Image (cartoon, rainbow, N blue to C red; front, side):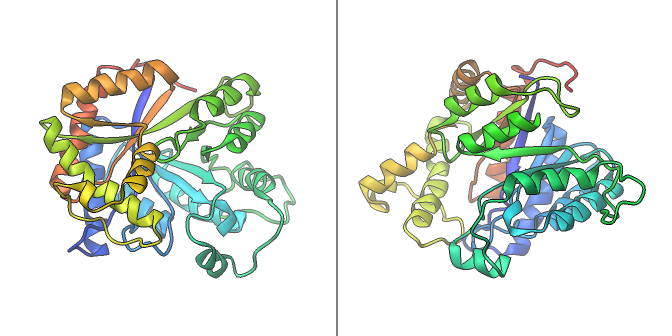
Length: 335
């Protein structure tokens, strides 16, 4: 494993505002940079009271301005919601402002419900144009040929690194075909992780972007000084996920002592399965679990994520994760 990185959804805790959440994101990004994280990614979600990162490129710029060296990017932008040229202009502008620190991860899902997807897109196309849109978008980042009728300005010549994100085999196949790095959303959809990594690695075609596969695995983290404290803090994310699955999304709940009293058993079982690619507990417990995951899937990079109601506890959780992961990283150059 070459690097470890951090995914932030800018959670909005109960009792707090979106302004609080965005301020917390900047504070966490600075802490992540100090702790040795390689990337700090933000994700596009819409119409969700508990997530403040809907305008993802703007938040990325805000974080990049508040940090100095950590890579900052999208994990990801949901490309079907946008025209490829607009995304190229946005991320080309970010790359122009902040140099070679900007990443662009692309997802195929809408990142929201159907009604909101319609509001975002105005017109819902029946065909899936994601592969063509990815190729078009990458083209805008390349050196524009003389006489090109359409160019991304800023954007052309910035060569912003593009990642394919996924939770199924589709993204793995596309990333392999295009020779792009691939990130799997195992932090909430672990079922096809092993198969997707296998497909990606076995069918990868070397490209001008990568000479060999580069796979990132996402893992949930909730670390504290003791197992009991971490399990207690973890209930906020379990409650939030249960409410989302029940069609009642809201702000990130406060943790509870008796999660079983708040979530029906069958729902809690589903939630815990969805969040099972994770490490929760004391530093020793987290270390054992992360070692299991890394030994099993052999990722080139690990991306950790986790939502905790108390911001200070969340920062501490990622600091513990950094301490653990720093021992596991192989320091060498990557393509």
